[in-house]
Length: 474
Image 1 (cartoon, rainbow, N blue to C red):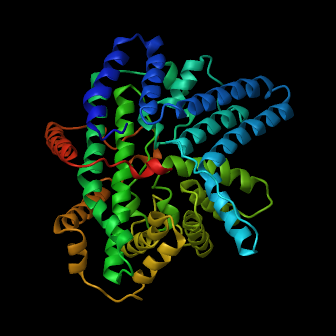
Image 2 (cartoon, rainbow, N blue to C red):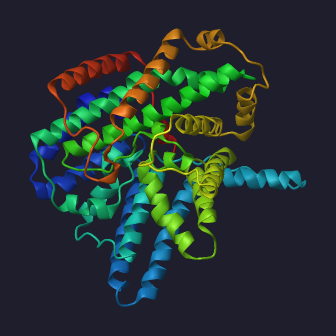
C-alpha cells in the first residue's frame, strides 16, 4: 500500500483515524501498531515476521544494555556489539547478498573457476530505514542519550509508525520518546498536517510523476546526445526531489494528524553552494544519522583524519542507497568532492552568504551524480556520461520532445520555477530549530489552492498507472 493510492486515501486512512481518535490515549500505541502492521502486511504478509523479529531483538537488547551500562560497561558494550551485528547481518543478507554473490561469481569466473548462482532474495520494503531506527535506539541507550521505554507497545509503535515506515524520515527514539508518552492533539495541528499531506501528494502525483518520462527517456536512449543527457539528468534529479520530498511531506503531515512532530527532511537543497552544504539540506535525517553513528565514531578513534572519515562516511552512504558499484561510486563522488571542498576552503553551510555562480556550480555537480544514481549500473552510467560531455554529439531539443512530450518539458519548467521561488521565499527557513516547520500556518487562500490542486492530483491519480515512490527501493 502506498500513500498515493485510492485505497489508502479513501479506505485505510479514514478507518485508521476513526479507530485512532476513538481510542483513549493509553491505547493509541496499540492502534498505531495494528494499523502500521496492516499497512506493511498489505505488501507482503510474510515479511511482517521479519519486521516483528527486528522489533523484539532491539527491544530486548535495549533492556539488557540499559541494565548493564552503569555498572558493567564492558558487558554492556559487548551486548551492544551483538545487537548491532544482528541488525547489520539482517540488512546485509536481504540487501547485499545477491550483489556479493554476483561479485564473487564474476571474480571466480575471471580466474577460470566454476561459478555459482544464488536464488534472488527479495528486498523487504523499508528495511534500510527501520533497521537504522532500531540501531539508533540501542546505541542511544548505550550512550546514555535515552532510556528504554517501559512499554513494549510504545517501542513497537516507534519502529512501525506507518507514515515514515517505508521511506523515512528516519526517526530517532530520543527525539520522539516524550511524544510516545504524551502529545497534543488539536484541530489546528490536524489541519496543518492535512495541508502538509496534500502538499506532498501534489508534489508526487502532479509534479514528480509528470516529469518521470524524462528519466525513462534518458535510461532508454542509446548513445544520448549532450542536450538529451543534460535535460534527462536534470529532469531525473528534479523528479527525485519532488518524489522524495513529497513522501516526506506526506509522512510529516500524517504524523501531525496523529499529534507527532517528525524532524524535517529537506531544507531547500537547490540553494546549496557546495556539495557539503547540499548534504546539510538534502535527506537531513539520513545525513544526521551518518554524522552521529558513522562519521563521529570513526573520527574519534584518532586512526584517520576527519577528511578520511568524511570520505568513508559518504562511500558508505552510497552503499546504503543500493547494492551496486554505481551506488558506491555515487557515494565516492560526493565524498571526494566534499573532501576537496574542505581542503580548499570551498565548503559552505546554510548561513553562508548567497552567491549565484557557486549555487549554479553546486547544482551542476549534483546533476552530474545522477547517471550513477538512476542507472544502478556502472557501464550504463558511463554511456550517459559520454553524452553529457558531448562525445555523442550536441543533439537537439526536438529529440527530447519526441521521446517524451511538450507537456513533460512544461512540467519540468514549472518545477524549476517552483524550486527557485520557494527557495528564495524560505531562505530564512527553519533548520536551526527542530520544532519549526515549513508550513506553520495556512491561510484561507492557501487552503483553497491546496484543495484545488489536491483534487486535480486525485483525478490524475485515478487516470494513471501505479507509481511507487523512488526511495521504496532502498
